[in-house]
Image (tube, rainbow, N blue to C red):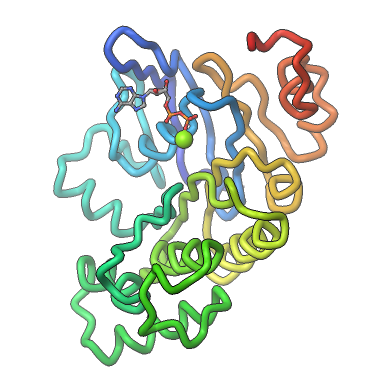
Length: 250
Ligand SMILES: Nc1ncnc2c1ncn2[C@@H]1O[C@H](COP(=O)(O)OP(=O)(O)O)[C@@H](O)[C@H]1O
Ligand SMILES: [Mg+2]
């Protein structure tokens, strides 16, 4: 399979704090790649590097073979129009209806007419199991529904890839299951790439084609679900088992 993106020898620091050091990660096209790691490990930063919201201090980032670390802001805006981003906190606008929220990227990035937009927004909400909420406000929906509306907004432009930041964190197991299923279905429908940052091992085992574990600034393990679960790396095993005992400092 081809590559969708590549972080090549990337280093990132915030002030004196080194978050990534010479990190390299390939993101396979058409697959679901899950990024795991401790809080503060730099998982969200990886997503921000992939759509050019964050520039590394050194190293290069490629998307579809193009070096985005060399792009100007105008090209980056264009690139971001082709990548969906589902934020950790749904980031819907409370003052807009669900339909208006989902329509926003189409209004920003396309010249579609209102009727076309309405049709596409309705279809996309349908595809995440949210028919009939077009005119409701975010405050009128449950947490899981708001999340799915966020997914709909992330995919409504038919992006080449979707980045999900902790899509299921803090939600109950049933909603988690529904959301995980939705991510898999959306990937199939778009025939695209997904990168999912998650702590939720059950959900990762269900959806991941590949798992990458981030620890102390580098990718310490990468592989299929089976490979990662059987990894002899004690850092991986401690993380998967949620154990206090092991090489990870608590
Ligand atoms: N804008 C920022 N300014 C300063 N420090 C930041 C900023 N964004 C992230 N960090 C720090 O970088 C580290 C990695 O952050 P993040 O990528 O959000 O981690 P994760 O998503 O794995 O929890 C954390 O220690 C965080 O505090
Ligand atoms: Mg994060």
